Length: 107
Image 1: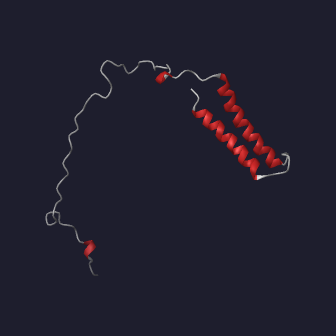
Image 2 (image 1 turned 30 degrees about the vertical axis):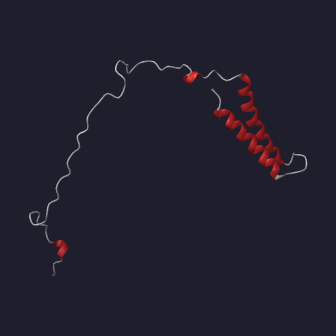
């Protein structure tokens, strides 16, 4: 039987040892301002002085989303005047996008 190089035991004293990495010391510090409590109730007041959105904005948001879905559905079924058209699809998608943009401005 022949022996291969991989079967030989490794002599740890003969191989060069790698130096261990030094541990970094991290300075601890307070993250939260002093005097705050961990169980304090959340502040639900309007930040940055924004007033609540008017009611018409909610109606516009859901109206645009619903109108866009209906336009796309009616175009798919073939109930739109003039038959199916890519223009109706773009109008429906634009209406849905308008509803999403309105939702991002809602407070």
